[in-house]
Image (cartoon, rainbow, N blue to C red; front, side):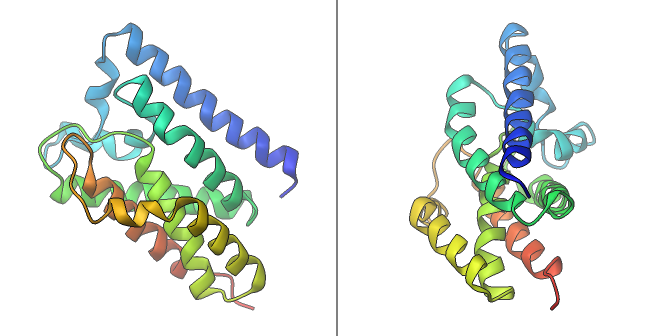
Amino acid sequence: MPFKQSLRIVTTILFIMVAIQCINTFSHGFVSQFGIYPRTLEGLIGIPLAPWIHHNWGHLASNAIPLCILSFLTLQSGLKKFALVFTFITLAAGSCVWLVGSSAHHAGASLMVFGLWGYLLGLAVFQRNMKNIAIAILVFFIYGGLAFSLLSYQPNISWSSHFFGMVAGLLSAYLFKTHK
């Protein structure tokens, strides 16, 4: 996908998240209630919405740059593939968080950060070509610390979103691999 088009899509994703965070700020956190709240009927709406919602500006800031970089790299497979992977990770990981996550409002793009990270690493395994291996090495070099965050529990951080995002990303790399 051309650089400018990828950049436009990534900028649009970021703009949407910033706009939602502005609404959340001005509404004193009202939007946060639309995250995934596990095992409740009301929490189901959070499955597609949670990656777009952040509880505060620091939360958004911590997710924004990795999401933009990983989205840009994933877009190099094409817009259709990106949309398919993004949707699959959102729905699969979000559903798993809804099923087994802790009783709290889970929200944030970290589900997608871990998902796209898993996807890009998985491509190197399931589609062994130099481009995917080079991207995986780059992604692991820059964001290898994500692996360590899966080994620790931190209060007020959705470990289940991180874990299931990564699993959904790996699974999407396998399911949507290009056969040559």
